[in-house]
Image (cartoon, rainbow, N blue to C red):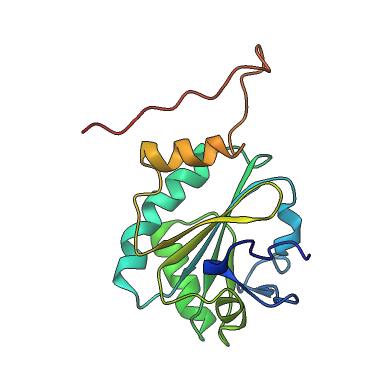
Length: 171
């Protein structure tokens, strides 16, 4: 089974799902989804014209800055057709996580996304474990705790067997 192959019926895809590989202008190389092996990954499908996408981007950036790269990765897959619009959006919001283009919607189609924003949470073994439709406050305690529960946060150096601490959302 190829990495990124879904394991549940809600996220079924073809055995040869294409990788998002078009680099954003100015980036050194294309982002390869297989380069995330062994990490928890949040894959977000979005577009510059999507207001809910715009709403969730600041929280995605805060999440990306908070969690260590050796345990967690975030990649945003834009369905936009014009790289200049994406570059302007990235600059306006100061986004530092990898952003790739999927103008033909091959990747979005392979994972049967229903629209934007839509996000897939992928565990360290490459299995899609959750699908989120609509915007989220990604740095909220419940999402951080979920990512940590999958191994997406570094353990304290002084206590390798310690469990990550997470707080529950208040009622």
